[in-house]
Image 1: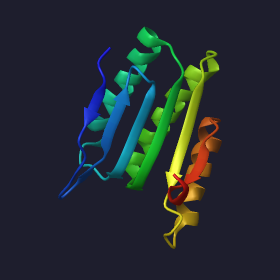
Image 2: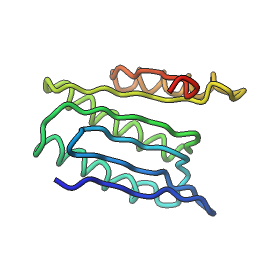
Image 3: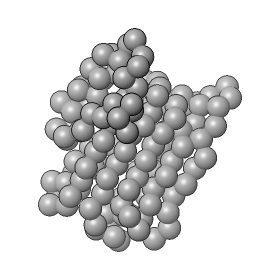
Length: 133
């Protein structure tokens, strides 16, 4: 299975960097996610995860290192988390880490959003300050 890598970019819209490694089972989404065609961007990521579950079937660690994401990205993040939860429910090992910038003023708002993700998906998410990463 091929790794998935997408170089992030900033312009009118912000595309996050995607690093999904099929050999190690470590997936990372970093940067900012503010896209015009959010579903079009996130669908291949979800398809890659589905293939990983079916073809590789090993433990998976997903690291979110997003410094900003808009509402439509948030909905896609929930879809990814639900997909990870279903994989975990089938008995596979899944670790989800959410790295947050603990130096910003509105960090509580971000943490509340992640807590909402936990409630909505039932998936455990480790909260890790970026200053300790």
